[in-house]
Image (cartoon, rainbow, N blue to C red; front, side, top):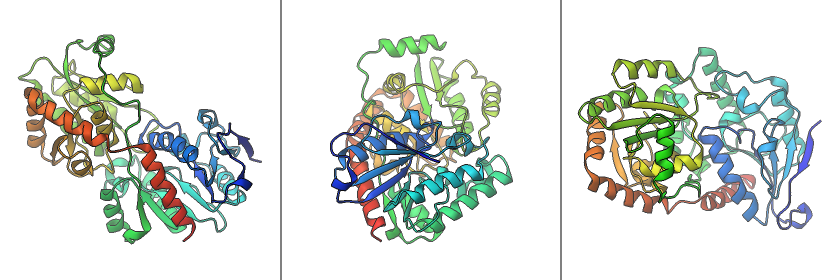
Amino acid sequence: MSSNRPLRAIGDADPAARPGLRIGIDATCLGSGRGYGRFVRELLPPLVTLDDRNEYVLFVDEHTAAELGPLPARCVVPPTSQSQADAASARGQRRVVDMWRMGRAVADAQLDVMYFPSVYSFYPVPGRTPVAVAFHDIIPERYGAVVFPTRWNRFLWDAKVLLARRRARGLITVSEWSRRALAEHFGTPPDEIWVTLEAPSPVFRPALEAAPRRAWLRDHGIPEDAAYFVYVGGFNPHKNLTALIDAFADVAAERPSLHLLLVGDFEGDVFHIDVASLRERIAARGVAGRVHLPGFVPDEALRHLYTGALALAIPSLEEGFGLPAVEAAACGTGCIATRNSPLPDVLAGGGLFVDPLDTAALRAALAACADDEGLRRKHGAAALERAGRLSWRATADATRRALEEIARG
């Protein structure tokens, strides 16, 4: 039996007093360190706090319920044997009974619409409840041969995506780029795909003091006055980090004070990662003392690293949005980013955008940002201005409108 755990109400949370819809949201990936976890953590507070018309019901498992803060929403916690986010990771295995319990709890809640903020955590919902599912990109579909550790993992992903698409009344995505990709790949009419842009967390803003950054670098064995590029994200093959390491090694050969930070968690990823191969490449290129993998970095420390970086490098084969580049932009730092993303539009003027398969272009972009302070200042100013146009409040408002339209058919 599921438990209905009420959270502290802000304002009027009485369903009878709310003339709008009862909206369910799957929050089982709340604790994930990847982009979809950040998406849920940033979206929920403004969505459920600022909407005084609709009622919200959050569905979490017992392992992530404690991570929910005080929100004006009811929290439903079906009993599950494991964290649903961990179970859906590349090394995990989802159990049918857990998915059945989650889906049954949703069906019993008498919702007007149920929203999965990522297809990653989708589970079947019995009955006729309208369902909305967010697809942040189609990278697994385009690059399945490299992102899945086994054929079985790919089969399970494809089956989940098929179920989600068939069950969904509407799809939500995070950029016009991704909407076009979804429409083209799945054949979904564009008017059945809603766009809710991502945004930088308020924590990301220019860090005015250098001391915290210098201390962090020193504590991690990096010269405190080092010039560095930073990458933030996963370590999946489609992130194209081998190309970044190669380009950096070429540029660093003539710039002895240059370093590269590859920031991100090594565990709990839904897709295949191979950090060992990256370490081998780093050693083979002779930059083992200048390319650093510090693992997960908390937001406040990350803010300082963003601010002090020459640029944020994100050379992925494709990005559905590219949130780390927008976070860096909010800290006044430009990017070197893939053209295969919405970033050339979202951060227009705020960086250099390259073909991810063109290592020479990536190398030239790194060299330009390393050598030209005026270029870095220009990119940083433009990036900061563009990032200022985005907010999670606007994302929440777009999400509310999308869910209302999907619920009403």
